[in-house]
Amino acid sequence: MEKLSVRLGDRSYKIIIKPGIIEDIGSFVKPVLEDNKVMIVTDENVNMVYGQTTKKSLDQQGIETYLGVVSPGESSKTLSVAEHLLEECLNKGLKRTSTIIALGGGVVGDLAGFVAATYMRGINYVQIPTTLLAQVDSSIGGKVAVNLTQAKNIVGTFYQPKLVLIDPNTLSSLPEREFRAGMSEVIKYGVIRDEEFFHWLEKNIDHLKDIRNLIYIIKKSCQIKARIVERDEEDRGIRAILNFGHTIGHALEAAGRYSVFKHGEAVAIGQVMESKIACNRGLITQDVVDRIDNLLKKAGLETEIPESFKEEILKNMKNDKKSTVDSNYFVLPIILGKVDLFPVSMREIRENIF
Ligand code: GLY
Image 1 (tube, rainbow, N blue to C red):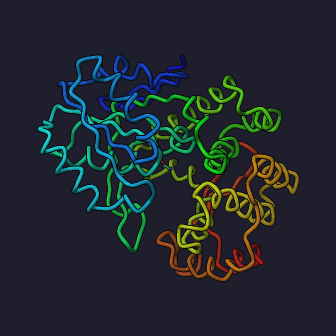
Image 2: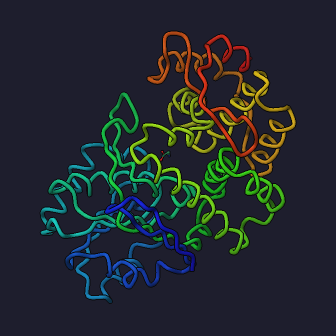
């Protein structure tokens, strides 16, 4: 069992990584409960595999447990689904002292966290992420949100969980494509913060499914993210470095109407494009770009923008809320393991994309 802490004063919490923890979730959750009522928020797919196991383990601890099941996918991250869950909380008699459990991937985590943040002006919640992306990124740091039709994650807040429980065994039932998409964020941590970790990934990329390696990459990623969140909980400074690969990545996701590329897939392409921009500016050598490119490819990810998306990406970048009149802010590597923020003009972006 691995235990990490996110130190945020009275909002501090533990991250526990343990294969098989889902089967005994009740005994890990019980110590953070303030009363006896819990609502598990999950989606239909995760519910089929882990819903009953989780509920049974909580029941065995004498915890009164309800299930709030939503449809899988981004379409559930809306105000109306949140409203339905809030009504469920009220109907089942959840109080200010009750707890919500987010059991699932990034969508469930963001949605359940949003419900927890708003029900009775905020109740406790626990994250049980079941995808690699959620285990290494979205379950940590308290970003909770729902989408509006016009924009993703536009309604939300920062609201930290009381506990994050990670069961690496859940990754064995994860579709391969989802695993690869999560690896994009894992590799990103090496590029932005830890050259040694990047090197370790290069050496072990073909053996990541070995449980010891899985635990290691989850732990390392959580550690890196936790240290950044501790310094900048509300994303006003250094937390921006987590967005390496995301400026182009977000534009690409939008160009694909959020159905062509998974978030991690778009971020993989973004990481290579943004490394190329850094290289053409003389910040890093071609060798660094090649290492990032090769590692992402070995993880099974595409690293080039498909031709048909290029113009649309440029158009999206012009509309990006982080762009000034003619430039966007990019997180660019300055050596392997370190990044900084730079304004990049539309001309420079165009030159690197085409
Ligand atoms: N996923 C980026 C962040 O949590 O800030």
